[in-house]
Image (cartoon, rainbow, N blue to C red):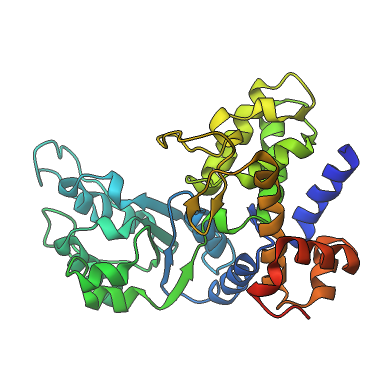
Length: 347
């Protein structure tokens, strides 16, 4: 088991990683390609994904690969700042601009001059703030709050949203001119429940990082623990997985993480807040929770992994078998067992 986990960690470093972003999923590999392609330019990037999918890490990866890598990387979650203070946070203010403004304060745009500014939760910005953002993106100038002095900045802006902006535009809640200005390069981050193949990679990567930070000796996961992780739906995405692994490392008394070290809601796949309606594990299938017998529940992640691998390899059986490190006969039996022929043409 230790040797297997060590092999998996080496795979992470050499095949599936980029600046601590781990992914073998086909969509993640395409995102890695986009990062490499877009990093050298100053093009605006817009990311869309659920909370916890790694938008900040993607933004940092773009910055580190850009000509601005030695300049500041500054980030701000717009939704975490009250609307009355957001303008000051972004553009700064002068002394006396408002009650409590006792000194001049530079904003995030000036702090990121010649570097990169990452604005998360841009969907929460008010129409008035959207107009101010549009101006600074187009003209690269702004005025601090309470000042008539125009400030020039050279900032690459990366933005993120946890709601589809096109829907907000259609409802009149987001300015179409700003949307078209920022939607130059779009990166869609998939939720972790759609990246079942990546769960073991992410778990091992997090284990290696956390054991080093915490000074603990934990070498891997039992097969049962890994199956439980792969069956879980992760509504909090990668961030939730990291918290679960860190908790297990702290609480376990063994050198490998077992099912008993995982939170009960992970083992039963009932995220907090979801009421219990019967016995059995609850895998997420086609976006819905379905009570089913334990044996079937444990097979569900294997089915999803094989299906994801087939799709990632254009349904080529030989390539899929190589990716999964199984022989073609075993793969074919699994395809028949799970009834995957109906999903696509297996070659």
